[in-house]
Length: 455
Ligand code: UDX
Ligand code: ADP
Image (cartoon, rainbow, N blue to C red):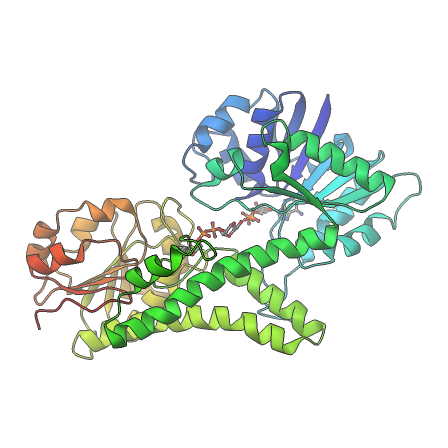
């Protein structure tokens, strides 16, 4: 039985390996991490990440051919194929700080693989990485004892949080980058055969390692660019009485444009978009392509502008002051169906409101633990409440940050009754029934649409 190892049991490594184990019972799949608590959680009934349907996949394979462990050393020694899925955050120090990828965890892993390998291995980059990282990895791996061969492949993960299981089970495509050499082609064929257990063969693409690495950055940059593009128009809509949803619908019906990722919002969040674009920007600057860098950097700037604009709208609409006012923030996760708050627009919005001395109460069905950590330094200015109806009691305004479907079904008549008047709703996701809220008495401020105001 061949053994697949994954180093890093995070958002990408855990679900991906669970799916491979489920679909490929003839492989032994081991997932390791330095974080013992995380490993224990993967083995328990309460997984370390919230993903609809993931419990079922993990349960089906756990201790059959899926194992979680902290024993990195011997797992490396026993593995035939090693996926590397450790975190690659944005650097916070030194050269490229705030933009370049921090590759220290990555390099440490490469050195560990080298130190504990006595047989040939296929090493698969699963984390999103700057283009040509595989080259650095190969240099490290081949600096050791002669006789052990490492074949490095790139196999970026395109799953989105909240839909991880669906995306893994039925991906638009699987991309595998390898070198055009005998051993490179053999390694690619082996990885193709693993995915071919459940992915139609015409959706498994092969490419060069460098194309594969760049495609992942490019895919995220294009997706984020669509959101920044529609968000830029939302600002114009608010001044011209055009409706951003109508505009999105009209342009999205053009087959060449397509309807997805055109929902105007308070901004995009998540661990990937900003990080990957800044990484792309850094690479372009590194190669002297400053115009290309500036072009992509604007996608991130537009997103920050959209978050700041949201806060300014709240303040301006509430008679130019929110000092001492209670504002209930509905949702803190960066999107629905996840507890993840990394780069969530809610973080910047709450901080902006607190800077104006608002009293903020945050509610979210899954993300309150993370919200506590993200806002720990704000002290008494922020409180937390799991029940949105309770969060709204005594509030002057509701600010919807996450498109949780629960928020569409709340008893807004009761909520309105419990709020200070005039009561405001700022819908950062355009998901509530604005007309109905207006009819209840709320002053409603959507994104990219004319406000419905009684004032
Ligand atoms: C993204 C990519 O979709 C995925 O392919 C990649 O592997 C990782 O990055 P993810 O960050 O999980 O996935 O979430 P995604 O669904 O792409 O949403 C990102 C952000 O954009 C969220 O904050 C979401 O609310 C926002 N968004 C999305 C919008 O504001 N409008 C839209 O139309 C779509
Ligand atoms: P991603 O979203 O890319 O999956 P995460 O931060 O969720 O990123 O997960 C990365 C995981 O990698 C974390 O659980 C972290 O503890 C783990 N990790 C980082 N460095 C190492 C290492 N050297 N060996 C094993 N695991 C590591």
